[in-house]
Image 1 (cartoon, rainbow, N blue to C red):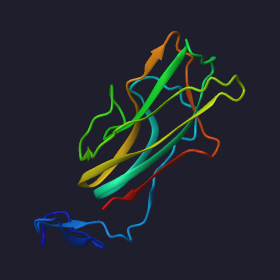
Image 2 (image 1 turned 30 degrees about the vertical axis):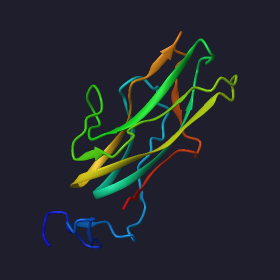
Image 3 (image 1 turned 45 degrees about the horizontal axis):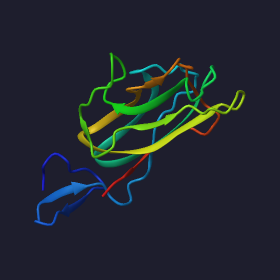
Image 4 (image 1 turned 135 degrees about the horizontal axis):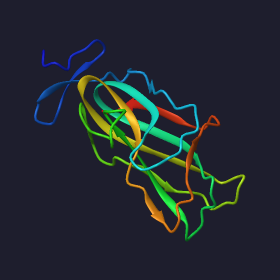
Length: 170
């Protein structure tokens, strides 16, 4: 069956009504992304120099980013940080082309209120996507920060905890 989604290593599968489609093989390996290796000041709607390239199909993208604050986060001065994926690596915000989100499209968290020098926060989560192009690079962006009081600031850190990888979803 030729429908544009066939490729080496794919399996022909059907849904409950018998409609056939090509899907990633259960043997499809994990795909690792490229992570930023520099400190980046996190501002709203910013590409943070991390990306992953996936083939057509459904994927679970695992994201884990270590964040620190140069300020002193507290109950009255804090920042809710959100990360998302986009098909672009420049512009005013993440755009969506060549893929769709299957449910949640954000990974988020508050800055840690533990005093410096240990004021690290770890943002982690999973974003499920359906890549509709034969191949699509997805870029990691910040999106829709919520600031309480005075913004304590936030930067990415890279002390070997960070990860960006995808596994096929069936």
